[in-house]
Length: 75
Image (cartoon, rainbow, N blue to C red; front, side, top):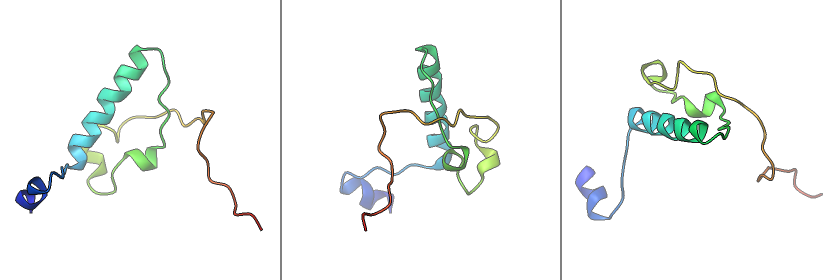
C-alpha cells in the first residue's frame, strides 16, 4: 500500500506524527505571540488518543474573526 501511495505522489502519515507536528505548530504560534485555538475533540485522535502528546493538554477554544462559518441554508 505504501508503495502505491508513493508511486502516485501521495503521502500518508499517522496520528502520532501529526500530534507532534501540531504541538510544534502550537509552540511556534505561542512564541510569536499568537493564540492557536483548537477544539480538543478535533485535535485528539479517536484511536490511541491518550498515547499522543496532544491528549494531556488544554486548548483555547475561541472563535476568531474573520472566519468561514456554517450557516443555515436559505429557505
